[in-house]
Image 1 (cartoon, one colour):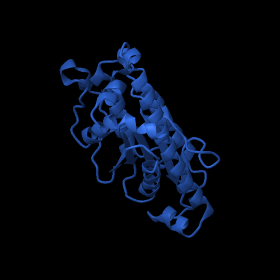
Image 2 (tube, rainbow, N blue to C red):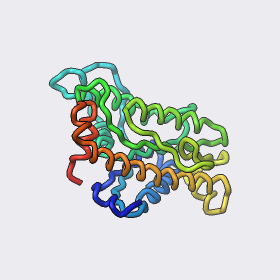
Image 3 (cartoon, rainbow, N blue to C red):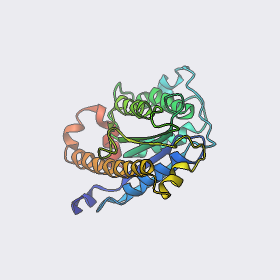
Image 4 (tube, rainbow, N blue to C red):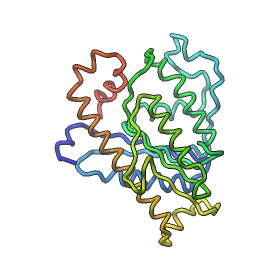
Length: 250
């Protein structure tokens, strides 16, 4: 990146490990974050949030978040609030998840459901523009075990929240980073295979690296563009979440 990018302030990168254990998902996520942190001439802060041991209940449809005095606050008090705050602060969100029943694990689905139902009401806007960069990594037991379906779900989540989905570099990464454990159940199976020179594991790691880099580069472009267009964007209240993030002290 050009050295002038240093003027844009710090890029906040949040990595969410959506697995109930710290293993393959966390390993590939850290690989992506390491690559993200090495983008030239940009000040980058990375955070890791693991869902292991976290309490995240499902949305119960009570609609209390829609009551004006609650300002979009979820009535259920658990680990949702802390992760939501990190999500709102981030310029980049990278999700790394194991495939559960051809989709994301229930804990992460609960978070996404509640996030979607509350943050629009928090801003009292029908379609707030968050303009975060969102990337997805998925790991399965089998070569074709639902990884692309799971990544596609997270891409749809990005679009629904008016964010920007990103891929890494093809051919390794068409829509995100995908790995498989070759039917091994050990929590470090992909890392072990990578260290042993396994080709598929090497592809998964390279895809994670390129995804992390491209996510930060796109976040820089969005931040620079938003800074240049602040006056114009401020005329549309839908861009308030994005502009508030740009204006926050970094």
